[in-house]
Length: 236
Length: 146
Image 1: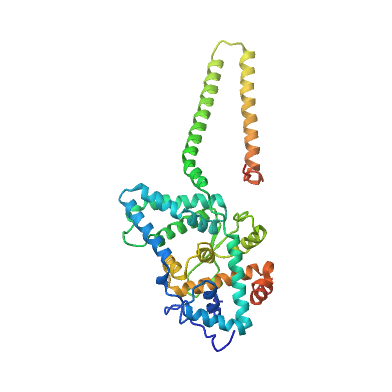
Image 2: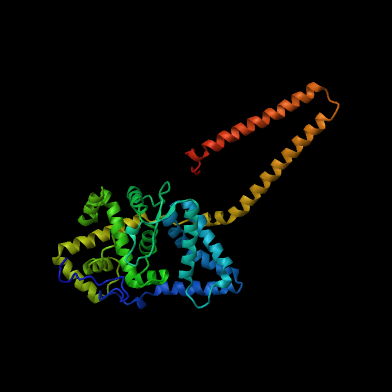
């Protein structure tokens, strides 16, 4: 990588992702459509349309499950927590402000539901000061549980190794990696979901991936880049 | 120790793999990839991570799993009520039966025999229950599904 073109653009700064030549976020129709649709359904549910809430739940439940599973690990717990988050959302429907995007609101409910569960099972503890992000925001370590999420049969062994590394990450790293890799959201959509600037999304994603690559380096060292392998060696 | 600020090239490589670069920036990066091995390595590593993550993505729950979950609260409530009623019935019948027996004119051998039978049964039940509760957290088969 050439040094002259390597000046850091401060992606997490208030100025955004710098002059990287990113795509225009307006070109990404799908997530905007989904946001508009579920927000509309939530507004209808608020006015007593139970079927609208059923449609909303069906549209979002698998995504909610994946996020919950990235935090809590167990498939059964993730299913129940996703369900619980929808129940809480329905109970709180009167507090939903129509016209505001539904997905960030629901994301907070789901996150709080999962964190409460982890706190009750004594698996959530504040991350050390050294792992604070550039934003200085506190993060959470999640104690490992038994087993790993069930992936498809193909590449099962690789998937198991992936989850071994993934579970060493903090709650915030797991969240952003899930939104990007499993939900395949664009930076702009992740920014809206988490209510953070797009530059902060890039910064968080970069660091989360670096930590994941370091965690996976012992299994995929040659494939995931020399820098991460060196980091892993230093740690061991 | 705080997080280091990523370099411009690291962010460019990441945005390229994530399909976030505009046409011009993408073409420029692809030109550079031909002559910059370090940048090429970074892109290749990120692509491999992407493929690995895709393969490891958790299996999405099927509709029947969600349907079973929706039925579960009702089933749990039914089971809890059923057990409560059954246990209450046994306690009332055993307690009442013993009271009737011991206050009746039945022969002493019958009272002692039935009393011992009930007490023995209760002790055996409690012993088995206690042993089961002690090993339950370590039982490797509790998570086995059909």
